[in-house]
Length: 320
Image: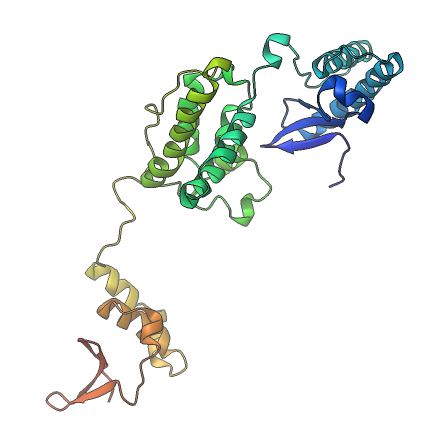
């Protein structure tokens, strides 16, 4: 995919970015002008970014020629935006037009606050930091990369309702080119378990909300709660915990015709015996593979059966 100048994507939202000429950086107090285009559509973002780049460049050149020292980067963006909006209205152009309401321009976006949280989180707590890096971008995408003072409790509750619909392996190749919203919409198989939902997705959002409430309350971060995060999926109550196999399950497995074919063929007999020995003894497969048939198979004189001698356990081999 060709790289478009002035355009980049963060957390699935497209942004406009343009470097400020060196002689204007002191006046603008920034080296780059960055503005969210508030769209996830590349097709919408490209013309917006190019039109805004042309307008910002003209505006900067005008200020540079006038040698003005009383401007801000917000003023530059506003003037450029007015030009883009007016040109779009004249030409009948359609697409997402972002808002530059002055009252909202100083309020940070959710993605910026999340980035700040991740950068400041204790790097020695690697396990939790890994979970935070994996889950918080999903939080941003599902509730939208909005100004933090626009986040509602309903947004958080909706996030919990949607995130539990993610598949067990959302990193599977089939999902590689999809957004999280698209993955959720197309998932038909097993979704995340209750334990994962509580200990990862809900716990990570809780940590972020606690931090953001302390550090961004003055900038409008609302009083939010994770109490609305209730698991409603089908994989609750330890459905995937280890348990002993039932007799009918063992019979289905080892009396299957395919298993009988494996056992009757010298070249494939290990397909039958390895899982059988493992299930019976609890030994790991790599441990079983280290058995020496010359020293670890013992003849029981009383029954005339051979058996495997594995630590304190024995398994009749039924071989003579």
